[in-house]
Amino acid sequence: MATDFKESLDFDPDELRKRYRHERDKRIRQDGENQYVEAGGKFASYSEDDPYADPDFTRDPLNLEIDVAIIGGGFSGMMAAARMRERGFDNLKIIETGSDFGGTWYWNRYPGAQCDIESYCYLPLLEEMGYMPKDKYSFAPEIFAHSQAVGKYYDLYKDAIFQTRVKALRWDEDLKRWRIETNRDDDIRARFVVTAVGPASRPKLPGIPGIEDYEGHSFHTSRWDYDYTGGDHSGGLTKLADKRVGVIGTGATAIQCVPHVAEHAKELYVFQRTPSVVDLRRNSETDPDWYDSLEPGWQRKRRENFAAIIFGEPQQEDLVNDGWTDLAHRIGFIAQQRIAEGGKLDPETVREMTEIADFQKMNDIRARVDEEVGDPEKAEGLKPWYRLFCKRPTFNDQYLAAFNKDSVHLVDVSDAKGVERITKTGVVANGEEIELDCIIYATGFEITTAATRRMDFEIEGRGGVSLFDHWGGGIRTLHGVASHGFPNWFNIGVNQNGFSPNMTNMFDDLAIHIGYIIDEAQKRQAHIVEVSKEAETAWVDMIREMAAAAPNRDFLAECTPGYYNHEGQPDDAALQNTPYPGGINAFNKLLAEWRKAGDMEGLELR
Ligand code: NDP
Image (cartoon, rainbow, N blue to C red; front, top):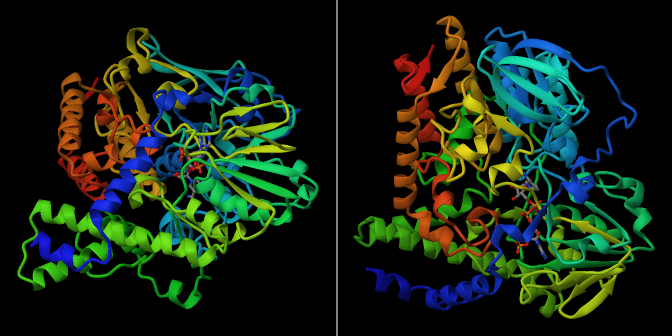
């Protein structure tokens, strides 16, 4: 069967495999994730500066006794607060570093910022709030405004403690409460704590030698400096007209902001180590008649349909129908051909079909580069040579064409595994110094790095044990939300729970689950709810076993390096830190059954 199938292809899979392997190998660095420096210490300004807050804000230290403290006011924290509110919890506080709600959408206001997931799936609480997104793919200002609207709708502003950075959470066994220390000398004692700090809350900087020597202007994309560039989210960066600008990085963020910088900068140098997959965006305005016709329960149904298609679960229709679900259609098409030819869909065949569909999809992505970019050398440099989901795919209709301007230069640093050096006046790449007035770091976030790098505060459970020590050999939880030794503590994160590229879907479902547990603990008059050691071990073992057997285990190991595969070095801890391998729908089914059983299995209530 396999041979017949290959004969009908207009490309050689072996050649593509070889090319992918070559591109991957040349990018692998021995220092893996340590190639990045944390945006703390002398680099703290890259993460701690807040261009949107009142710099003179002061307040007296707080001394509070509360039921629930939620750390983080992005969508995950807001979901937790909203779902607690729905259960009648009023004595709660949300502690947030920024001066408003929004999280990643508070910080990321760079030009062109847009959500890459369909707004009808991504924007939370649309049905509850009766809100119709303007477009199929929302731009950042609308998403930030929506988070503010959620804050108003659920009356969360009265409980927000903004411009406050948590320094430590310590369990006080005598009080049976968490003591929360902050940078404003607060003493907040909470029965329950939900950490909801988001996967993209801490910017990451490349550890390029000389980075601290640069004397020109620089900033990270998540702290865009409009005073320097001029303009706003929609562009108009006119102050760059006499500037030589360098953008380091070509991930999802760079793809969105580069067209705007390209339009205005005197010269733009884009330093690229790995090209992104740049698929069509094809945005469109929402049709109000269609929106009005949606039946109650539509948003959950749509999110589940989207996740099901991505995880290869058969569906009658594709409600979202975009670049995310396209690969599944291609796989389905090949599967139908195979069945028509009398073939069987055993696991090996499915693996092979998936790879073929991926090759075809990526051939189309590469062909699009040739269609958009006139200069053949630039076009060649912009082509990605890896499988579709090795990195988060991007969608943009202006990025590739921006390279047609003579003032926009593609600096390919893949052979040197990145930019070589930064000097007082510019960037050294491929042995040549390029003088720059401004460097913009589009180098991403601490998404899958060690938990200590992602949460910049201490969490001490029973007996003063640090969460980061407890998780030293890999994350340990039940259902991704709670750990043994950390009573009344819950986490909304991306490890050991159901994954979807639609993050708000994950956050909301976890918030519902955590809300249920806290509510039940209250109803059952338990002071303490804690995961048992056995339940934690069983969940961790199950995650490891499933992850080791998952068909995509080899897939990630063979991918070009990035944050999905720990920079090409997926180790033993990484295996344990994976999401629940069955996908978000299967995970939610499991949680729903767990709640229905009503016995809080795996939790000890005291
Ligand atoms: P990424 O981590 O995706 O990209 C970082 C970029 O910096 C990569 O291109 C990387 O290259 C490059 N880089 C790092 N170090 C060096 C170096 N030493 N020299 C040269 N280049 C270097 O960050 P993003 O901010 O783009 O995106 C992060 C995530 O944020 C996305 O994956 C997505 O989840 C989310 N996001 C979502 C959006 C949305 O629409 N919902 C929009 C924007 C971001 P290499 O690839 O070789 O490592």
